[in-house]
Structures are given as structure tokens and as C-alpha cells.
Amino acid sequence: MARQSSDTDWSQRWDLLLRYRLIETIALWEGRLTTNHLRQAFGIGRQQASKDINFYNSEIAPNNLEYDTKLKGYRPSESFSCVVTKGDINEYLYLLASRQDLSSKIEYLDISQANITSISPPLRNVKPEFVRPIIEAARDRMRVEIQYTSLSKPEPRDRMIAPHTLVFNGYRWHVRAFCEETNMFKDFLLSRMTDISEITLKAQQSEADDEDWNQFVEIIVEPDKRLNNAQQKVIEHDFAMMNGQMIIKTRAPLVTYYLQLLRIDKSELHPIPAAQQLVVTNRSELEKWLLPE
Image (cartoon, rainbow, N blue to C red; front, side, top):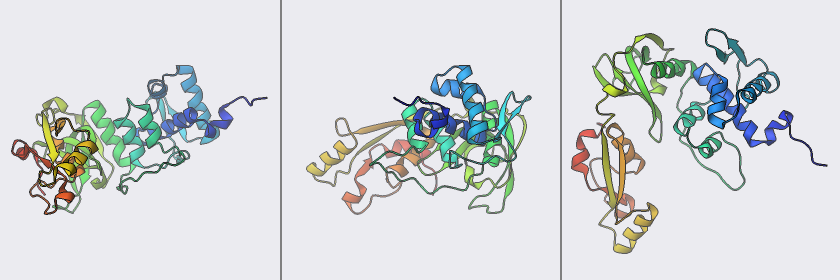
């Protein structure tokens, strides 16, 4: 006689495990969880979503969540601890980046599968309590005061920013935001925020005002012509090129990050063609978008 599945065997069921991990991840990084998060992600009804949250909070991670009447949702309790996730920011931000693709959610929530492994960049030091106000400010179009450090100015300094988008550049996460000190939109690394951010007033600048961000450009990539014809065909096949080219359409401020991912030096060719492999043929058109070293 087949055993009927129930919430008690949640660790054996991907659908339940995914839902409980989403519950824990959203609560930890956003600080507010509602049934809508589950309904939108998994296409389930409000009653089932409520049942999942209650089961998580009573059986899987007892008292991890507290209902907040002002927030009209659940927030992490003082004793919150991660039970079904690792508690690193990649789990949350990958969910944002792949919210339209459930298969990506499965991959980045780390459900083990036989004969498959992958590597990820070393994790940056990003703390939930530092990130929650950034996420809230970006969502609600608010200004937020951060304490920030950089290589050029290593001592932590207060900065007032208006964030609009979280970005993963292949190695690390940053937030695109208007900086009131420099009066321009810039990228701020999440790992370089050194204190809990404080949300202040409504932002005057938004994503719509970020002209560079709203400009799309094309990066035209081809095999290095120093390779012989057979080698060039290999590279073309690797990247599924059409007519010997790969055309990447992206937001202008992301050009440098794409070149870094493709291991294309912004300024010079590698002396060994087999190490270079790819070249950008419209570099002059992209010059203004390349970030300084």
C-alpha cells in the first residue's frame, strides 16, 4: 500500500522544500512575508500558502516568524535562525533575478541532484540587517542613509542614496542608486555597507531618471582573428554565434561587467590568441561606458 504524502515528509518533496525555503529566504532578507509571496511564486491558493507558512513556523522552524499587524505580514523573530537555507544573500538575490524561471529557483536553492556539481564565487560579507532597508527603499522609492567604505576612501562614511535596482555582475552584488554626494547614479557594493541603513524621505530620483541605465547598447563579439579558421569555428560553436558574431544587448552601465565575464580586457589584447579567444569589434562605441580600473 502506497504511503500518502503529507507535510511530515516535506524533506522528500521538492515542491514543499522549495516553498519552505522561499518562506525562510523572504522573511530573512525582506523582513516581511505574506501569502502573496508563495501564491505568486508557485501558483497556489491563499489557503495553501497560509497552511505552508503555519507548518513552517510550527514544525520546521518553531517560532521563527512573528505576525506583525502593522506590516500585515510575518517578520523574523528575535530568535530567528536558518533551518532550510544557508542564510547567504545569493539565495535571496538569485530568486529575484530568476523570479520568472522556477527551474532557476530550484538550482539556486541548492536541491541536490546526482551527478551534477557547480562552483560559485566566494561569498561576500553581506548582512541581512544591512540589506533589508536597501530593498525596502528601492521598492518604495525612498532615500536611505548608508555607511559605506571603498578602496579610495577606506574609512566608513555616511552617504545618502536613492536605490532602484539590485544587480549581480557575475561575481558580486551591488545596488544601482542615485548618490546625493556626487549628484549622479552609481553602483554601491552591498558588501561594503558597514552599518544598518536608515530610511528617510521619499526619493526625488528614480530609475526613470537614470539616463545611462535606461540606455541599451549592443556589444558585438567575434572570435579573435589571430586564431586559424578551424579554431574560430570552435569559438563560434561554443557561443552559438550567428554569422561569426555574438551580439549582446545590455544596459549601458553593465558593459564593463559583461566584458569581465567574457574575460575580455578593456584596454589590450592578450598576447596569446588561444587565451584571448574573443574580441569586441565595436569597442569605440562602448568606450564611454567602460568603468575605470
